Image (cartoon, rainbow, N blue to C red; front, side):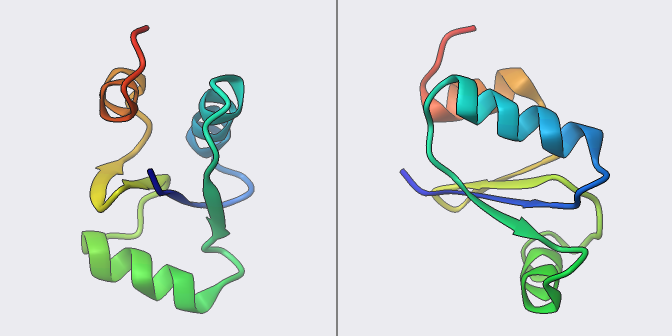
Length: 78
């Protein structure tokens, strides 16, 4: 399973999403779209918007951090 999180340092929901993955020992790649212009363009191309976090789970995109939706997509019961 490949998980990518497009985030910014000041985003509270981004921090919550990353903590969720860390607490459940799920590896992820993080991209700071405030600093990485190429990843920002990639995120906008995937979603058509600027909001973060954008969580890409094996090509399935979740915009924002909805714990229940993310847990279901990664196979965790909460």
